[in-house]
Image (tube, rainbow, N blue to C red; front, side, top):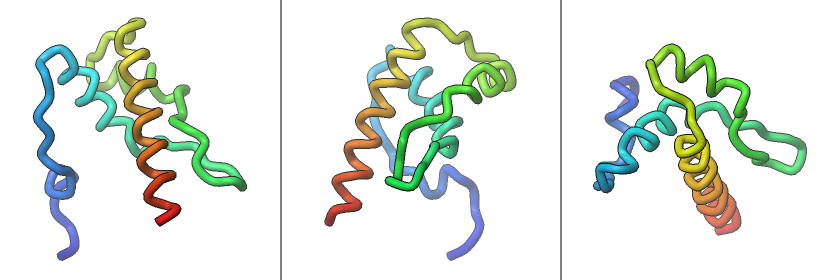
Length: 84
């Protein structure tokens, strides 16, 4: 099947209320990965202010900590899956 909406391809995840805002924003920037000759490096943090403005998200220390935690987990999962 081709096409559809991006949400058609995302798994359903149950989250506690305190993280839903950060997770939703992370989903908005999850196409902004930097790569190099050795593979995945991490998220391109330079897009965060622009995307936050577009989606009316306040960038604060809590959001950045949440993004860093989700980024680290995503990198770990991606790298583990790349080896299998």
